Image (cartoon, rainbow, N blue to C red):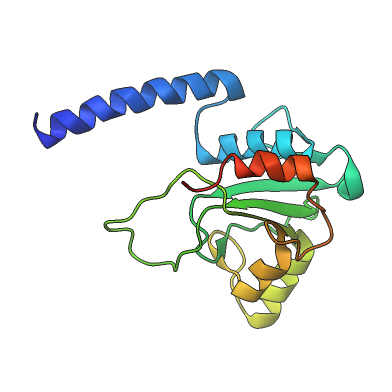
Length: 178
């Protein structure tokens, strides 16, 4: 089998798996849609009916952030970058993150579908901190490692704004890297 034939066969398998997941989450199988679905079930988020609502994906339904808006991100690698908006209606970013990795060439690497850490950023605060440093706010904004560490709620509870209950931690461990 040639490499092209092998890739075509693997893509057929992947498309079948993606179709099964899409049937469960009721949206196309992408990191964005799947991340929103996982976050909704683990953290009690009611997702917006439309996947194209400006600035946020849903609202927390319980706990200390009840009623607050959230934009969910799933970054398969945590490279220190965060896609941000300055829209006033957004309260928080909830970021599911894969392994920490420097923002470098992807040649020879992989992006495993896993969750190694979870972070909650106050939307206004992170934008204000970046502005104060003169950092551009928007797609792929550079967020310092100290900000990521301070925003972490899982596995380390650095940020007390959203405590992770034992049953939530158990669900998140299902997505641990193997």
